Image 1 (cartoon, rainbow, N blue to C red):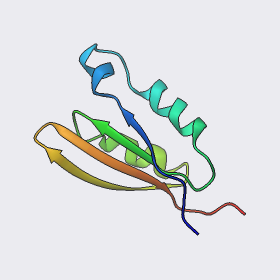
Image 2 (tube, helix red, strand yellow; image 1 turned 180 degrees about the horizontal axis):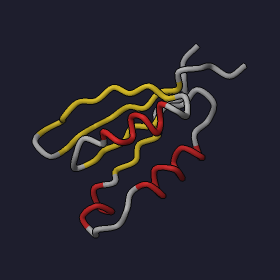
Image 3 (spheres, rainbow, N blue to C red; image 1 turned 90 degrees about the horizontal axis):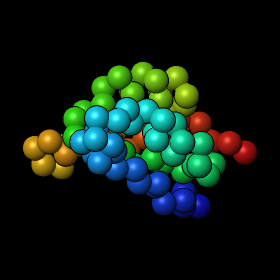
Image 4 (tube, rainbow, N blue to C red; image 1 turned 90 degrees about the vertical axis):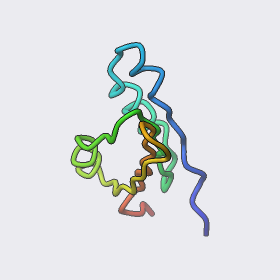
Length: 81
């Protein structure tokens, strides 16, 4: 059984406007379907999110697409039956 496609959220425009990305990230998390992951695109490695979302049951895989563009896949660590 395949999980739904990851929901992608690019917070670079918010960051460029000096707006906090956390409300958009939390909103995206609220829209996830059971088992769905969140693919976050950011202009920096969002290290503080690792603990925050880890506490909400998400693991992360991070890579830098190119200098200044980070992609983090937050995946649920527990399945909900």
